[in-house]
Length: 366
Image 1 (cartoon, rainbow, N blue to C red):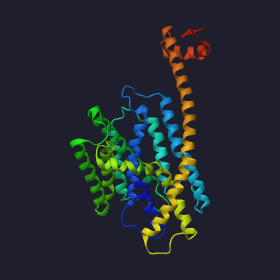
Image 2: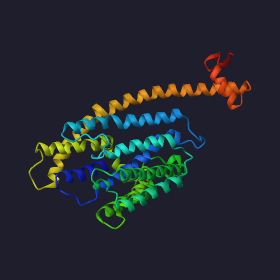
Image 3: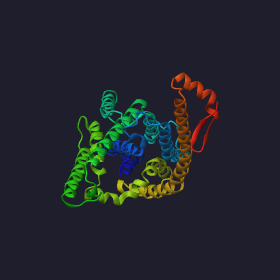
Image 4: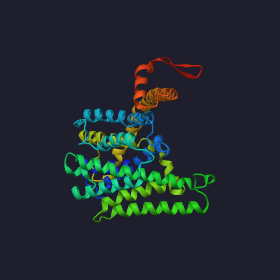
């Protein structure tokens, strides 16, 4: 739904029919949601006993992010170029700037984040980012600065992502306190309370989208964090009803990356109806966008993701096996009394290649 709202915003801008509702803020919603999902997908971020999770886990995570984001991103770039749009590989002049920054920040997340990263530090980073945007840009609509704004785009994405990471941590804590027999569906008085909370969240979001005040833009990421946290439990009837729209979420990435080329193609060939009705033109736009997004999902996005993830799994397993073998070597050296760093380094330099495995044991042959 957030991706479709962003397409409405850009459709109005391209066709010269301005949309008064600040739908560009929906970008911040799915950035918060991305941070939430990102943390859920990072298995290395769930074990508090690992002070520094091993590199194979981190490399597998980064490889999976490449498989998730890059194939369709590159394909959409070529299509945008073919449809008459200037193909800017930095993404600064197209709506896919969020994908580029999400990708770069997810790599940073994979390299530096762990379960022991303090939550207060994440919240502080998000607050500092919003304060910096308030003082330098004045809003979250960084695209209005002409050609994109490098600092604004990066900080905007980063702030919303860390809010999503914090939301997932709170969600995990709340989930641990729930009874396992309660299930995930709505039932009883708990369902009524959850439904009321979900309805209240949607009402507040709708109200703030229709009302403008001084710090309107900067209040929305905080509200989106609460919305994601509320709906993640899926305890209410509203969230259960929205699950019926799962397919729109499945193709949302294709929808977001495709809409820019589709709307420009429709305008260029004069395929939009010659009417003053915004809804009629929008219906034609969606009638072209959604089937095309389904096509790119099943032909480009899903197959390339499966292929690349299988390759990532293969190479990460090899890397993990190599890491385990190296750990066994070090254990063997220590058993032989080579405990000092210098002795370990010398042993690895001179004897690493002649360590063999015999009947389940490592034998050091000097």
